[in-house]
Length: 39
Image (cartoon, rainbow, N blue to C red; front, side):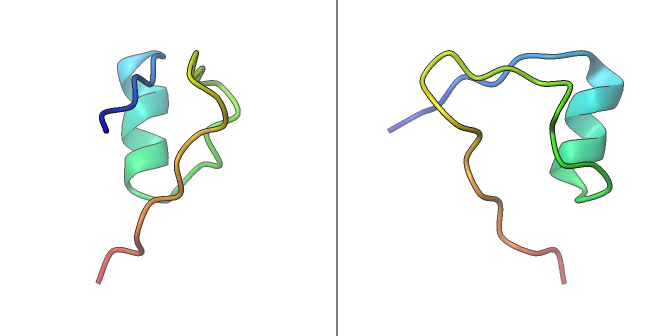
């Protein structure tokens, strides 16, 4: 099911690319989902 993650565009990009741990993001549904590693 979809999960909502909110934050600044820079924070989202950093998390999605694996450069940050997502500490600046919020997820009202619980902990941030674990993303698969980028090739």
